[in-house]
Length: 339
Image (cartoon, rainbow, N blue to C red):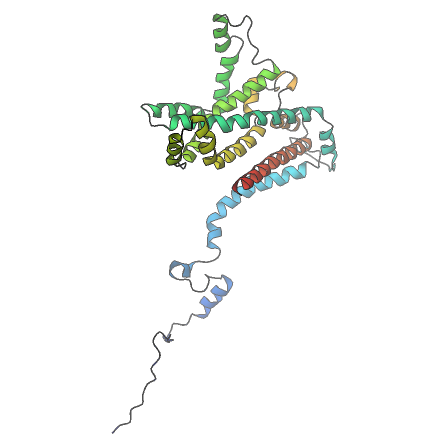
């Protein structure tokens, strides 16, 4: 009888290593994997052919745009703030902190800073509250409510220049508002909306609010959709009025949206330019009394004859620090609210 050799039987679930001829990677493939690392161990499917640099390849256009149009201009502005560069170019010399010292002693700079801060202090609270009330008004499914939603959003689509020209026609001494008030015998002389420094500033604030209401209304409409209707129904059954339900249910439900709107509005208020230029003219009101920081940067830094790009860059850095401080404050308030 032939002797049979028993083959060892492996335990169930044990792994076997099967050698397939030609399965070993070639030398070129091993070298490419060494130079261009592949996926992590255990990857399968499409991840076997994915390289570490592939995500960077897809994000490269956005990164290049951010560097070219964001990081480089910022660094260039920071560098120019220590020089006496001219708007039209030419030789520039290093002046150290002279531009910042001049800025601290410049009364026009502090006037522009006051106008910018005042603009933000008035516009931000109103822009946080009024679009919320407007969103609550148009949230209801009533006949024809779509028309009002579109009407409230229409100013957002209009150009700032076109809106500014329209408000010029409304607020002029012989404009629509003064004409109506005179015919109604409510005033004798025209209200100087476009010649009084304070009225120009407040008119520009009104223009900013009117143009931004529809935009931030969309933010609140999305946030209101996440507030449970059952809370309102339960509070109503307990006898809570509309005002009480608003402060104790609606406001806490959209608090994150309010923080976002406040941050965006604050940044936009510090950067306001078009409204004041259209209503106050190229001088920024009588004697430049209504100039904000962006307006002042344009006057001192970009004038081809008397401008100083170095000093304008220093004022730009101050505006950046002011905006950064507002953003950090908003983030801190948001974190405290979440905790």
